[in-house]
Image (cartoon, rainbow, N blue to C red; front, side, top):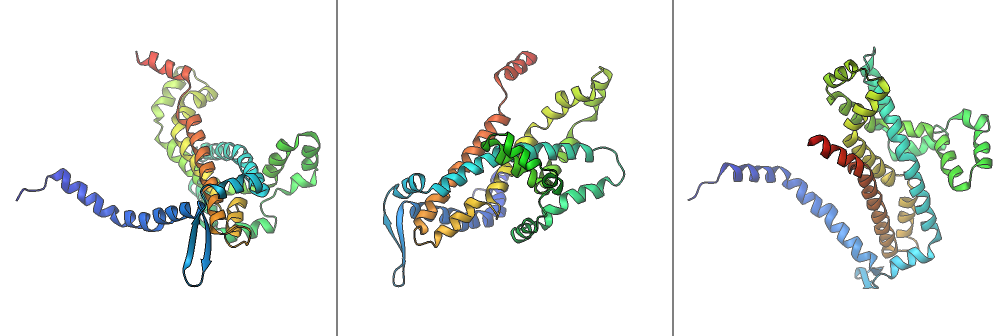
Length: 296
C-alpha cells in the first residue's frame, strides 16, 4: 500500500479541521440562499396540506419591486447616501482615535478598552432603546439651531444626510470600535525606523503622515471600509432589512416578493463593496507608474 505524503496528510488534516464549518456553511447558508433565489423567481404560497408551493414566474417579482414599490426605491436611495456619507466619516474618526491611542500616554490600555466596549455590549434591542431615549444625539446641535440652519441653506439631498450625521454623531463613535482596533494593529506594525529616517531627512509630522502612515494603512482602510459597509447594511435597525421582514408576512408581498427584495439588496451591497475595493485597493495610474519607475 502506497504511503501518504506529508503534503497530502497536512491537506487532509486541514480539511478535517474546517469540515464542520463547511458542513454548516452548506447547510445553513448555501441551501437557504438557493431556496431564496428560487422563491424570488416564483409566486410562493403556503398551504396546510402541501406546505410551501412555488409557481415559477421568472423575473416578475424583481420587475414589480423596481417599478411599483416606491418605498423600497426611496429606502435604497437613502441607504446609498448613508454609505457615501457615513463610511468615510467612520474611517476618518477611527483613524484619528487610533493615532491618538497609539501615542505613549498614561492609561492607554484603559482608553482602548473604553472605545472598544460598545462593540461588546451593542445589540439590536440595546441600540434601539438608546436611540428611542435620544442617547444617540448631540444636544448642542439642536439647542443652537444648527439643524435648522443646515436645512435652510443646503439642498435637500445634502442637508438630510448631514443633519442625520450630526444628530447621530454619538452613534458614529459607537460604531467605530472594531475599526479603531484594526487601525491600532496596523499602526503598531509600521517600523519605527522608517519614522526615524524620515525625521533625519527633515520630514514634518504632516509629511510623515501622508507619505508613510497613510500608505502603510491602505489595506487596513480597505478592510475597515468593507466591515463598515457590511455592518451598516446588516444592522438590526436598517430600514431596508425591516421592510423585507415585514413583506415576508404581508398580504401584498409574501416570501417571493421579499426574496426578490433581499436579492436586489444583496446585489446593491455587493456593488458598493466592489466600488469601495476599486477605489481603495487599486492604485491610480500615476501612482502605479511611479512605483514601476522607482523599481527600475
